[in-house]
Image (cartoon, rainbow, N blue to C red):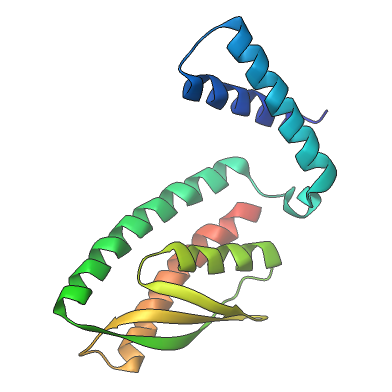
Length: 160
């Protein structure tokens, strides 16, 4: 059993005990058993070697960053919907080379309010974007590009 597998088993067991709201030997043993099964299943059947070089701590930091961006985008979307909005389909260039990170970027765009990833190609992501009525396509492209660039920077650090 690898160091990461042990860490994940302990982490999942702690999460189990916290969610059960019961600190007992039976609860911890049950959580450990279920966690071992989950880790074994993931190691055997999921393509984890493709993600082996991704830092767990940097991934956690990215998730916190993404949560902040989701809240910011949610309030932004409420504001522009109230003022009047339209949709635009934009092509966003990405410099991310690793497929896992490109897909993570597309998923991050999709779960951010006001945007939806339509297609992911080599270095381009098609995005349906909620836009303010008075802005032209170039202004929207710059705003989208800035947001995606922030996400790209955070994602690129995951594999360092």
